[in-house]
Image (cartoon, rainbow, N blue to C red):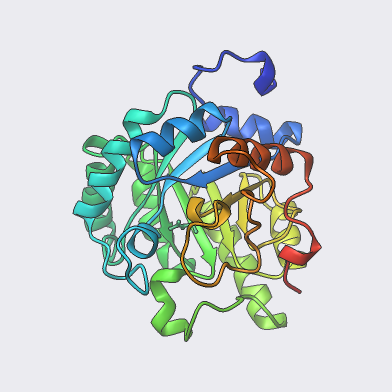
Length: 275
Ligand code: KIV
């Protein structure tokens, strides 16, 4: 039985089953990235449900222009630190660029993220081409989140950080990919930078939780890069990322405001969405 967060012990570990029950109960999942133990503990205590060590660390921590240079060693290093800060949140870790070109290599690297990094789930950027890899991981007991829409590891192929799934053919393809990856066993689907209406349709058609970033409010949960919502990322903040430090007295208060806004459905607002 799903219990509301306020009725639950703060240290009860969230599981995939609990996340699925939250979707069924219509409770929006509040998710954020973290890269170190201190922020991980802050997020955990502020009620964040899923903490992701994203390969966005290549950009916001390492200062690269893309996530492509991030290595397995980088991911394991940051995962170990984040894992030490978490008591309640479900813990997801990104598989970096070229760590999953075949099912065998994916399995070996996913095992490292779980055994050495402490991950509960791995996330990979995919389309229907990754269905065999998802099947192999799931068949070996590795929970998988499949990331569709803007796939930052493919930025050079996509021609930039652009909205994906616009137009009838692209939208149909993304819906088919999402259904196929769910059928292959993916436990969570993440949609990045796609039209709000398409994200809503995909969410209606899938059974597993759908987490969005720049995908509108009609998904089952939201995720942001922590440094974007704390307004730490240098330069331009993406249109979909609200600055939660605005009006907050501390980073902890900003994260609490984010959790509250996601649960209430007040974030994302229309100005954070794409048509
Ligand atoms: O790497 C990352 O931080 C991500 C989020 C943007 C979802 O994949």
